[in-house]
Amino acid sequence: MFKKIAALNNNIAKYGKVSIKSNKMLYEWFLTNYLYGNLLLEGSSLAKSDVNQFVFTKKLSEGDFFNDYLLIFNQMRILENFEAYKEDFSLDYLLNIYNNCFYGIVELQDLDNLRYKRNLEDLCLWLNKSQNIDVVKLVLDFKYAFISLKPFVKYNKLFARLLFTLILLNKNSLPFYLQRRDMSFYRNALTALCEGEKKRYREIMLDLYAKNLAEYLAIISGKKNIKYDKKLLKIGEFANNVGETKATIRYWTKMGILDVEEIVASGYQYYSDEMIDVVNKIQKLKKQRYSLNEIKRKLGHL
Image (cartoon, rainbow, N blue to C red; front, top):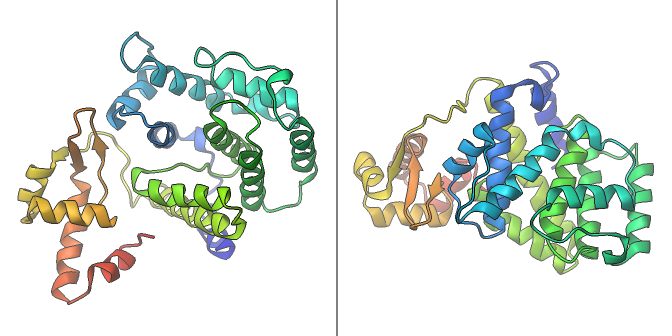
């Protein structure tokens, strides 16, 4: 898998040096996906379109989702100023980022709140000295060790994802994000982590990061359009457009062949018009007598 990631990075490099912040549209697309993925993992029902709108406006207002928006706002401030977080890792450094990330959400933490201080100090020292290790291996091993320690009272996993992203950005690598379709695989990675299965954890995370890089490559090469004016369709409308039943669409979605673009607070599922092309491919492959599992693999799903 490391070879696959290296090959994807080489293909990306053919389009010149890619800095995520140098391309405004790409950066806002990344922010929306990264922040929305974090909210999904925290159990939020905020819609992706709402997250995308907030990325553009950055306006906080009181309401049912105030804490969700505040969490987004805090993370955005850190990511937009990630150059300020390039210093060597230390306990004070981690506390500074943690308190900025969860300002107004949890009580400010100090050194007395930290658990496993000695282990965390050793982890910071290891990270500072590991200059010659492959950056992807570095961040995966760091995240594995950090979550295993659970040094803070709350939000250790979300904070670990933020640190993961900051390290990648500061190593001039494209950052990691999670789409809705990736959630079950990511949770499997966390289960492997909790069970001490480091190899399985690393394999799943590498697979997910390879998917990230493939999507970045599609965007940079112009094969994927990332404008947010795409039309969203309710499941009934979507099913009618592609000539399938709602039950079939639900089943293909459950299998992971189709991706839901958005689920709103009322529970309605929305599909993007891009999924119509995916259904057309499924229908063609079914006529060629491929099974759904074979179709899933052919379409590049895990």
